Length: 198
Image (cartoon, rainbow, N blue to C red; front, side, top):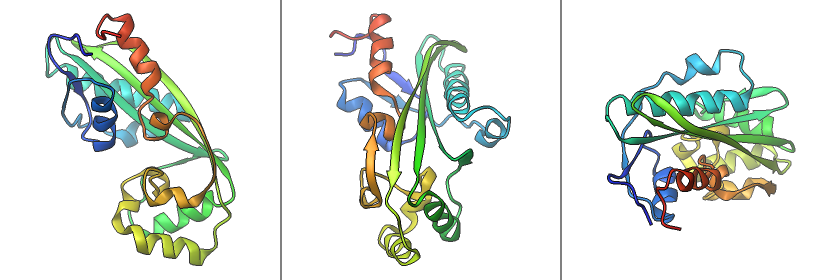
């Protein structure tokens, strides 16, 4: 499947993103990008543009460490009624996020960027719409009791691939986009670059 002379470098330590890529038949290595995400998140850019810029910064930063290698950066933002959400730092923040999302539809903006030798070669953003059930404070507490600290690992305090699926009334969008990597447009970009056999 993968035609590259070396594995794709994923500028992330996300297990979900790596599994998505490996499940699609790609050879992958990973490296943490060490990018200050908050500096971009506070620039006043629209949420999709924040995701795209962060993906590009991650890809470019890691590509400078790996000459001639193709590097993939990815990022995701969550926006609801004009508010940009971040990973909750503690249980109280997670409770607040879930109550703010309760009964509302929010958007996940997932972006990728491909870079080589410090230059972005391709990028895209894809959106998903998720509508959370109307949740009581007791229901949120019960959910947080079950998932524990995993609620702090994702923006919005949920993972739809796990127990977080119980929180939702409706989900619209590509599964990989919801998990933080718009795989369909990424694979199209890799095909254009001649790096996939099908």
